[in-house]
Amino acid sequence: MVAKIKIENVVASATLGVEKIPLERAASELEGTEYNPEQFPGVILRLDEPKISALLFSSGKIVCTGAKSKQMILDAIHAIEKKLETIGVKKFKEAEMEIQNIVASGELGMSLNLTELAFELETSEYEPEQFPGLVYKMPFSHITFLLFSTGKIVCTGAKNKKEIEDAVEELIKTLKELQENK
Image (tube, helix red, strand yellow):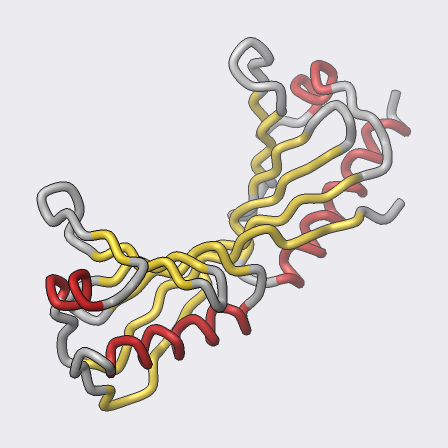
């Protein structure tokens, strides 16, 4: 059994090689921004190309979300640097980027009995009155799955595509072993 996996969201943080970002100026002069310092200490910047959202902080740190790939994040960082240049923010070194989380969805191609799995998978939680999916924290891993009775899955916590693929492979192996032991 091979699952079909699709990356839905890549979240990354970066430190831009700039002295300081003047948030009030960025909010007033750049398109697609929101800034309410009483509620949140950063500027929300929505880019159309690539289509991502970024949080900008005066320190030069940013958090990007909504990307589908690492390349999309890198393109967004370059687009943000260009926008900041237009308001006089000079770059003195290359940005340093780190992927924080990748969210992927998939289809196992089989239906799941979540009630049974809740008892069989030690690191799982299932409260169908509150949420229709089973939350499964992979043992010895930072990856968490949402499993649905239809066989659909959501994977979160990975830092790269290989981690997702390995985790899904391990999940399938675990589910097969549980079926064989019945």
